[in-house]
Image (cartoon, rainbow, N blue to C red; front, side, top):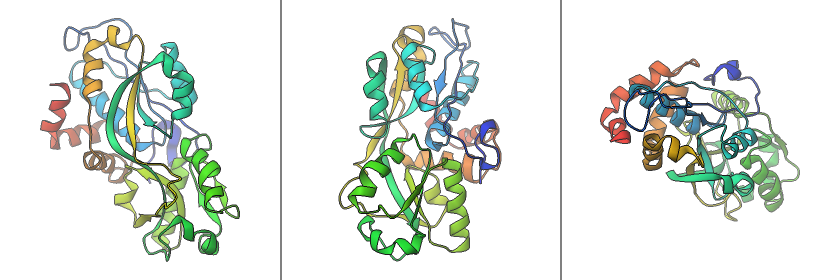
Length: 295
């Protein structure tokens, strides 16, 4: 499996993290120093956010901005943006997954809009599992050792699982194991490689759907929510301080197929934690699309 930066070596258990993106470009043009660096925070383990942030790191570097990556957990990210310590985060799922954070901090942040509108929380199983729906799980608990392999305990997906899916589908006999997204992916790979049944909490868009033989369980009660949008949120001062980058990020759009392509290059086809060269190679293969991000 792919490592995720320095805090995720060998897919160790982690809680959450964020990336910070710093720039020395001015609103006037490429590469001119202008005040404080730009910071973008992204949660560790949420690959779409890591991929989008690495992409923008490369794009801004190509425009002459200096870029630096740092880490923080989700609460610290939103608190930091609201306080002006971070400028932007690219991985806010609404209206469900990160709603609690937006309710708490939203008045002190600016919504830059949706860059992907195909996000969906899911329960996934191996594609040859003999069930197709969440309402079949309770009667087939033994097929999955009565275990739901989850991600970070503080995530919106874990909350929805505990507060809605488990009681709503009568899954109280299941153990919901929460640790980290990398640990979940390790278990998913191990089970599918061995041809064993496995039940995980997951989400779309995610490269795991291209990498592993898995399928989503239907959610007839709609307890996982409808498709969500992935938003970028910024500090209230970001537009004034960096209007050029603010405009680029506000216009940013990325469909799931394009995102899968980047994620596969970074997390599936590449075994390492320094994504710079991989992202540059991907950009070279998608140059026209990337150029349009800042046109």
